[in-house]
Length: 114
Length: 114
Image (cartoon, rainbow over all chains, first blue to last red; front, side, top):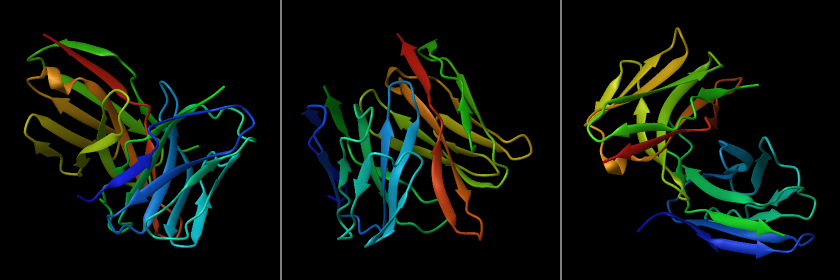
């Protein structure tokens, strides 16, 4: 089945450690996105990539980094510079064309940093 | 700042009730509009796109009022399984006419009781 996979589902880290969240899609989508969701909050865009080897900062990119070496993969690294890293992280993709495209989401990774 | 505003709820309704959610958006240049559904601790999933003429999908009806910059979602004959958070989502056009990113509202929580 086509879709987006994120792993792990739950992740625990100590403060000061970098951690990388994986996101893989087999939908052949060009565009991929990383969002963060906090309780009672909307999704906030961290980074996005419209094409391989290119990515752009979203609204809250500070303390995060990404790479897009392959079309299928868009890993997100949460660095120790991110002040409040505990959150629900969602990866998404879409075909990037058309005015009414659907954005598909992975199941998310819940990161807890103590 | 570009905003999408929703009443956070919760809306607590009995089974069989009709419930309506509204959403306002600040950017008059917004081009595409969606309602997503998010179950507790899960990823958002597209419920329906919203077209200028209004559209219906079974018990769900979406309306768009461009002049007033608001979007509505009507759910008729509510089911227990409709309990979820409903996210209003707007896609804007970038300067130059290219497709922009999605802007998510914080969501309206619906709880349908037996």
